[in-house]
Amino acid sequence: MINLQSNPCKFIGAIIIGASLSIISVRPIIALDLDEIASLADEITVKITDPDSGYNGSGVIFKQEDGIYYVLSNQHVVVGGSTHEIETVDGITHPVVFKQEIPGLDLAVLQFESEEFYQVASMGDSENLTPLQTIYVAGFPASQTNLDITSGEIRAIDRDIVANPKNQLGYALLYTNQTLPGSSGGPVIDEDGRLVGINGEAERDAISGRDLSRGIPINLFKSLALDFESQSQYEPEPEPESETDALEDIFSQAYANYRSSYFLAYNPLGHDRSVTSIAVSSNGQLIASGSKDETINIWHSQTGRLLRTLEGHEGGVNSLAIAPDGYTIVSGSDDGTIRVWNGNTGELLRTLEGHTGRLNSVAIASDGRTIVSGSSDRNIMVWDWIDWELNAIIEGHGQGVNSVAIAPDGSTIVSGSDDRNIMVWDLATLDLKTTLEGHEGSVNSVAIASDGRTIVSGSRDETIMVWDWTSWELKLIIEGHESQVNTVRVSSDGKTIFSGSDDRSIRVWDLATGELKNIFQDRNSAQILGFDTSYYEQIIVGGMSDRSIRIWHTK
Image 1 (cartoon, one colour):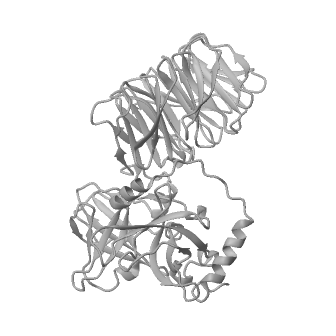
Image 2: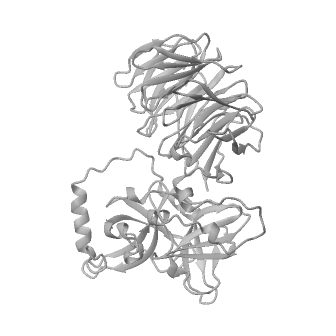
Image 3: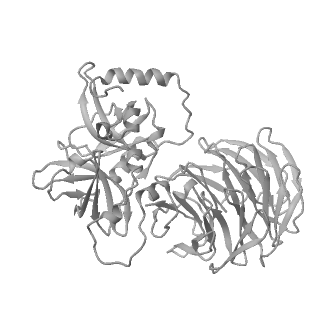
């Protein structure tokens, strides 16, 4: 084991040499600029003070539930039995109502109570950090009043400490950001605005004379799976007994309890007419919204910022899909065309023509090599991603095709139509496998569970139906919406259904039982015309009839 403290330069050299032999994948994500990083850091970073000694440190808000905010900081910032206070971005000082130290790590969790809204940090994955990667550290140095933000690079990651977190109290990250006393406990943020570590130590290397800082990777905290709610000694007022979420559940986005697990993070306007389609990239960074105004807007999910507008369609945009690469966008429009865009640059890559009616639905196979489209012309078309040629036309529906989905293994297409039927097709042979009948109105949306064993459909008849893939039997009819169901999605773990409706709600259902688990009800009475979720449902986005989009984040 290399002693990071005794010889940091030796360790840095070893890491850099090793990195030169590694293949580092390019992340096709639109990073935040410096102003956006500063704005985000200002919202999530808090000052922690000890009124008795006058000493201050920093912390980061990482969770909120029922008016209780959770702050992560260093143990050495809140050491002792003093009554500490937390100052938020609005200048309000809050007493710490509960403190829990993390055994073996220089970390502590604090709680404060407030009815105000404060931004919660978006958790990143410190396993993805690499040497020479740009990071930012925020904190409140004792020598100044305002928040201090420094940029720097990862110099080393001590894998021995990552494997044995109690070694060196978890300080596995070494970086060049020049931090000052008082910045301890502040967030380490990556270029996408995600929390990847907690800052805590600074020193000058005796050999190089270079200032270096150390931090604790956020995954060391996430892996502890401590349930701070159950340990909390603070109870603002008695409440009915309910199941609490362990931190492990929150950070892995488990599905034991959806209630109160999301908050409305952003509600931006950007379109001139109703938003009819939404797509979220699998990494959760990019949101695409399509509108009756014939445009596609690209948004950053962590800030709600409009990145660019894609223009070219000559009719409303009814359907969107984002490729597995996270930035290539496919759109279908009333103008009868499919367009393929580079979401990072806004460049139109290709226009696919062949349908004679409006495009209602587009889908991309998981291998990124096939596009499937459904149209009001009653046809399904299969397109090759490499040469952009039309490979096949599938006929069979008696009326317009409203929705298409491709099975996770890429072998099967499921389609829903105004003829009230769901049809299942073999993608290789184009043979019809089966027709599922049961809805009393148009089938507006179909989805396939990640295990490929369940089909879910949403209809104009206001119901959701769950079908068994093996027997093709109807397993469940879910009722509860008060108007037509426009969109359905199945959660990444295959246990939950999300549905959006003209009744102005997104509803969350247990796939096995049909039990209603949560309702996202729009307070401004706008219809949910389209929605999508990121992988593991960290983000839910709704397209609204009032021209806005709603972005919900997990708490």
